[in-house]
Image (cartoon, rainbow, N blue to C red; front, side, top):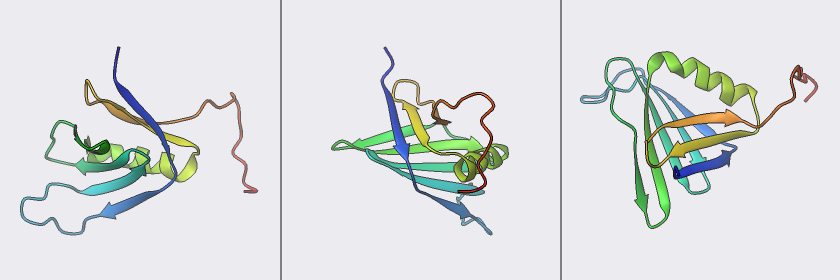
Length: 112
């Protein structure tokens, strides 16, 4: 059976890089705090690495690498949906964010 972390998160921080430092290949970044640690997402146009995680005494750091064209989709979910959950498969290093189950045809409520 897969070893999967699924945790709700409520805060994130966005990074937009104007000029890349030497050796830096990231165009955009998003950091997410989750109960078991932190998620560092790097959106890269010309450089890709495999996802990996570090476990330091039960506190995880998830390092996630995605193509730059995926950035707009992630930001859209972060800005417009709640609750959101971060999911990471410790065996395959595949990750994603997801919403909770929502009823079909649910309209967005603009009176929040």
